[in-house]
Amino acid sequence: MIVIEKLNSEFGEIKILKSRAEELFFYMQEGYFQSEADRNGISLAPYVHAIYGLLAQVNARDILLIGCGGGSLGTMLGKTASRITIVDKNAESFRIAREYFGLPRTIECHVADGGEFLLSSGHCYDAIILDAYDGDCIPEHMFTVDFFRLVRSHLDRTRGCLLANVHAWHDLDRAPDQYAAVASSAWNDVRLLDIRGVVGRNALVLAGNVRALRKPALLVPPLSHGEEITSELNRMAFRSWRNHFKLRNPGSGGRGLLL
Image (cartoon, rainbow, N blue to C red; front, side):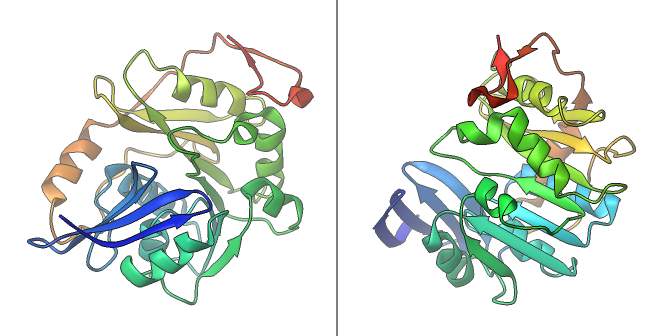
């Protein structure tokens, strides 16, 4: 791989890398891969395709993405949904997404914190996607009861759903279960889609209109690595999340949990 752009942003060093042989693009920030896609902006990350497939099942047409990265999910959704809005604190993410990952300029982009954006908006969405990280951690304020209640207030009452990407280092990492536990304070229906036994994986916490969701399939194959993505999607399964966390006072400012 070759580095085709390198810059120092307010949020750390960003590198854009390209694979010469396959024309694949990679977005790396502070040493962590944020996005990987083919030359058309189609993601190579199985969890992105899982989110895309789940959104297709609920026929979401008005979608808010909190967290841009390389914007590959926005690029993919831009061809199907009628309205896509993306929020990210890093303005460079939007430029990079458009220049290297095919994000259409017609997609509405806002440089803002996700929580602050929701507080300033009265709009309700069919789906809200949470994929925001500071390094390898979800921002603390997005791991609270108050934040989930704020998200719920901006979802359509009958069809709205939340889909959140939660990284897990291994099977003993309780982050996905913790996230599901906090989400259950705001929604009656919370589900966890995961792959047990995989080191360094992405689990999805689903809440709201999610009871009828089925395991997603690959709907938009990238130019390469389609078989690997299909294999990982096939290994995903809904599982019970460990509900043995006690909620703190919602206004405590922490993750809302006593472990």
